[in-house]
Image (cartoon, rainbow, N blue to C red; front, side, top):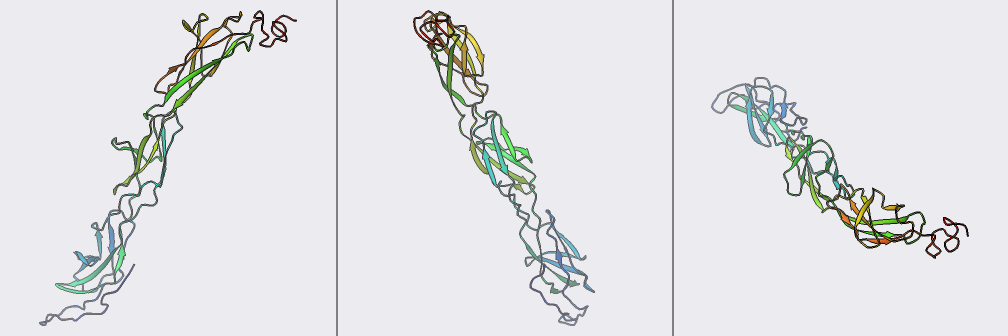
Length: 315
């Protein structure tokens, strides 16, 4: 690119005092690159009779050369990359906290410099060329770093996501049991209701980096949830709330106890709730329940009359 021009005509052939030489003309055809990250390459057309050239950047002399090219490694470098355009931290995953982000906007190149060149004939300097501009190209993003809280930064490569499997676990807050009272002849149905709470809120920072350095960070907070619950069912050995034995273990929150006394004698039930993605486990208080009986003098279960019909002898 070119800008305001310097003198474009031959200067005097003689110095004050009588020393004479070739005409001092301004160089032409100046070009400067903008596609190199480490330097700006300059070039211009040769001037007849020149013994060298003075190269200036933004008005300041930076070199004297005898060729018609110059590599300016002192041009201002591009800044570090911008922060990621967005960052989201999950709150519903039980295997960890998932971070996802979008690539930053295009990195910024170095500032535009204005260059000029003047010919030399011995110690005589001619007029400057027209200005021509160039700049160092932006360094591309080569990776990302993640910081958890105030921990050291962790370089994770070029991926736009990160799963923190070491995030704090959630908790099981409590559990309650209900059990049927004479609803079914064949079993007692016990149901367990558990409440959970996600892990503590954790703050994350993500930044891009390039050969120009680390960019600014974007932050977001997330938490880990509790995943699938497991239920261990326990039944009392008598009509009192105590002396429990395990009767079932599964991931189902209800249990049909066909082993309850067919006489309709009550039993107490408890559920122990756990999860590999929970910090703790809990056990409910006991709750009584019993099977319907064909001799309890109550119409219950599927009976069509008191103690007869349905699962009982015909009326």
